[in-house]
Image (cartoon, rainbow, N blue to C red; front, side, top):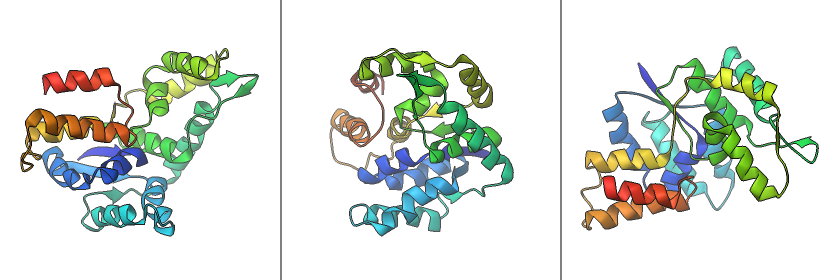
Length: 224
């Protein structure tokens, strides 16, 4: 069966835009499983349920688990070991001022490890660092150099090891999910000009955490 793995960010982005409901028709179209890791479920439900600010979003996300739109995958020994190795390599690639820069967290690496083990169709991640670390680490180093105003050294050995572990993993973002939903017509119930609707959807996910440039949004507005 096909599998799509979700990191925390895309679910939060959809929740903050009142778009969690789109996952059900998207899953029906996908005809496979929408899975999250135990760490991601913890970040989506367990932690925010103990807050005031995001408790309602956590309740809404929990409903998706109750309806089995989203499901939690069991953390087996292989995934735990792979997560630990990926986490070490990822956080020991980029150096500034003589120290390695921690750029990823355990939940992100657990999702990446699951995507590899499950041979997922894709990993859904909105956060820029993890996506660029997999797809274009040299470009990420340039961005970090400009942000930190210092030279960034890349540990080639650790980068190559991480590349080997993440080879074949496709990464998509919540903006791709929203764009697919738009093409499927699941937003047609809204009485709005199509261009305004698409513009609102794309900017909504961008402003709530999805790493996407204005250029990409402009391209989507002209092609969808």
